[in-house]
Image 1 (tube, rainbow, N blue to C red):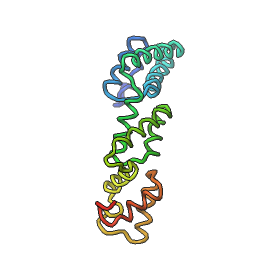
Image 2 (image 1 turned 45 degrees about the vertical axis):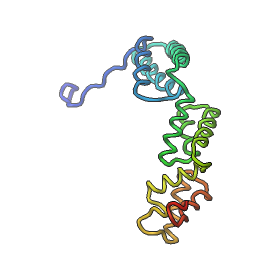
Image 3 (image 1 turned 60 degrees about the horizontal axis):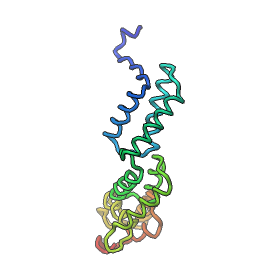
Image 4 (image 1 turned 90 degrees about the vertical axis):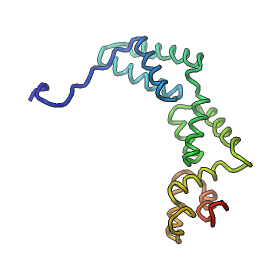
Length: 189
């Protein structure tokens, strides 16, 4: 059986990593996704590596092009790790993620530890009346997962332990998890 007989489409060859192609690819990526500097560097280096493997281009030249391009993007404001970390931390917090999970996800995207700490601190400043942001996130997760007082039936001893474990796996401390799960009413938490 030859490739002409098979119904599977052929894989396209990767594009050659030219300065114009890399810049256009980076701008397209930034138009679709908010990202960190390090994550954009990784995405663009994958393109350079595929090009080097297929076309025999120099990886070091591609890396130098990417560094220069990232420098221009940082200077023009297209890339801003602080803004990315802040919006991503806020978004994850609204979904009910703990500070530990938020820190891990931002670290995975290559955001610097100082920027992560500043973004998490800024998230804490935005809460009303001095509320604990961890408690707010835990309540949000409990509502979404129907844990504790948000469950259809009040949890018994075994279910209570499972609910506490679910919050612990989500990165919340035992004290926060216990306050949420043992809350008698929704407003009392």
